[in-house]
Image (tube, rainbow, N blue to C red; front, top):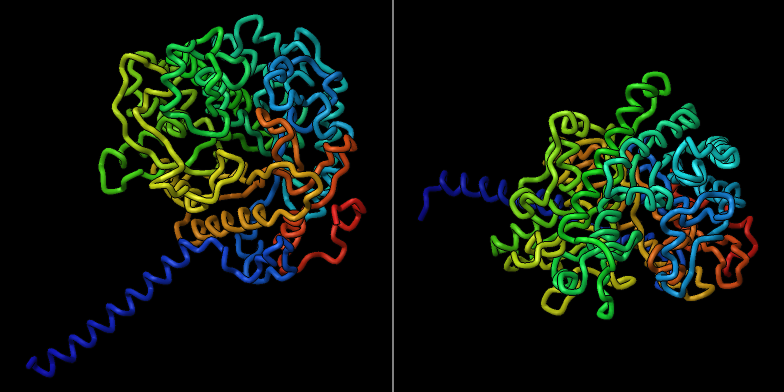
Length: 559
């Protein structure tokens, strides 16, 4: 029998251990709670509850920015009032042969869209500027469009008049066709000077009113979809013999879907061009930041950054080092490809090792210009995948095979999360892990989540979108946790999207908006979905939907 004093000590130790386990359990519960069991979820049929008192904007810092995002090509329309861009020539390949010549007609209805955004309680509007709406030929020498200048001044004035902060993206993929025809766009180093000149024009015209600038949206998507997979304009990739090897390789993201009947591309090289294009994208970004910092920032007093996209990657077999390393390589090839140069002035060591001399290098001047060229980082997150290590295929070198990784969203017959629109599997834990990863690896930079949202197939008049409510709420729960518990320097959250829009390769087959746009009857009328009503409640500190709900002002609200 133990000594009584020893027994007393053991009881104290046992009590301490139980208390410690309870604290850890509570912490784990907080970190993994996605809000799906919270009583504000509404009925199963998608109807949102009006009570959000347990989780709303007051759960976040007082200066945290809540916004929603769009892009010019996807919503503006009025294609006859701007120059031709590379997407205008590409739309014959889009699902249902749809195009964005009218899109949501926001060029004519921007006041309505801004009023909806403001009325729902958002703080900011992220939009993009169409390069060819300002410069129809891509350069100042070809003339500045007075109509384009007027439109964006009017849009920004309207945003500010509704007490919203404008976040302006300078390039959201709509490259002037003239520059593509002249020197192949971002394949040429000539693009750097033209992009810097275009950015300079934006700063000079709108910089007194815009205090948050984003140079590029998702350069990874532009470089890989356009030059590795050939699914984006300018539709460049390797021909069939090399293209087929990409099919089972590193194909991630919503723009890398492989069509068994796709023969590859007429022109391109999937083993070199994505890396060249990324190099010129980064140099273009850095040149624009240099212009802003040297000429405008001191008196305009704004901030400038870049928006990067990435998935989160879980190792397929967490106990296998090879798969853990595959997940690390996947992040390097998708996110580190851009973030490492911005942070260190050089590409990730994983890419240097696996790509070799096909990967460009920065000279000393370029490295100094790229390194630190951000005041904040924009992060677009939608989904996650498992990463499985595979043997490297050195005989077929391209972006798809270079990481020696097979990404998949299915493991042992089970998806990583609930499937939506073929490529998007709901995995809110991914955004939590990703933000902590960025904090630890890149010295906790200021971050705005500049896009986050979920797709639904267009099924006519369907205002009930409970999945969208659950998606945004569960991801916002994760954001609250990383701010409060992990001290991530997170500044804001932008939902994608304000309104249903032209979704690139999917045309109008899918939607992301909290506001429905009637494309079926070509009226383009706006109406609120249940997710809009949910946001209206969430964004009010008292947890109640405003009595004067902006959605009530739209009689065609789908009910």
